[in-house]
Image (cartoon, rainbow over all chains, first blue to last red):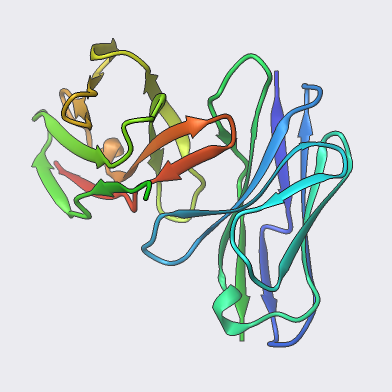
Length: 112
Length: 110
């Protein structure tokens, strides 16, 4: 069965510091991968998606970037965090035979 | 503009009652429709999906889709306190464009 992991689970970072969040998927090959952000009391905002290694599409211009160095690894990064980057970051995947998105456990980021 | 609208609630129902959650969407090109449940502090988990007009039942849950009215709903029968959560409606337009509503917070009172 497929499993999706995210780490860290929680993170507190000062404004202006860098960020690296990691997502990995097990039990499937060539998944589509997604990064979402959920602000407190808000819906999910799609940040990036990837259909393959090195292929990244950005949905919202911001100070975040994403990379997919391996088939089942998706990384979200920032060089300098802003207060507005605080939120719940969720990674999701879909397989080739389904359009249902399955979410990882999430990373709660607080920027102070 | 591809919008997904949900009543934010909170919706409060007594235990054993039917909870009705509603969602409207703006783009008629929508292909697939999903309901997720999200407990406080946790990630969304899929409840069910629906592609065709009509009803789809899965245990205590029934999804209803009306593409002409651009409306999708979720009914929860025999509501339990463990059903208390935020319910997210999601609408998919193509392989990589899924839009989420802000969610409806449901409270089931014992």
